[in-house]
Length: 101
Image (cartoon, rainbow, N blue to C red; front, top):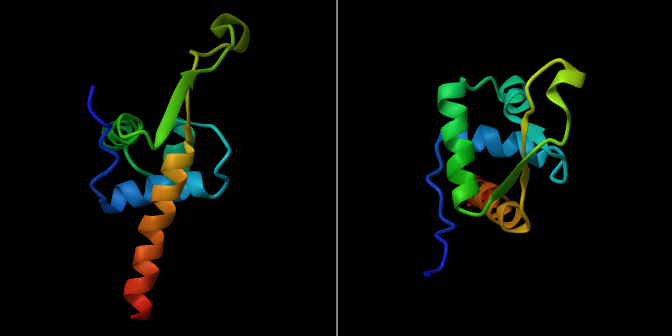
């Protein structure tokens, strides 16, 4: 097996998703919560989450609740990995260097 590719194409929407997670890097967020924070449509949001997870920037898991007891389907929860936090920090730092240079 080869090394996982950690580079991710940075679109404005991808940056907005990362910003939502950087507000509290240890927090787990469901897709609906990310949508509320950054207003990205689900057809754009979920492919970004999947791409970031495939690159190792995020991990996800199904929440451990009984859907019938909470009256809704289980949610998939996403959180930044240490790799994702480092790369996201580098991405935003590169913008700051560009502005200050």
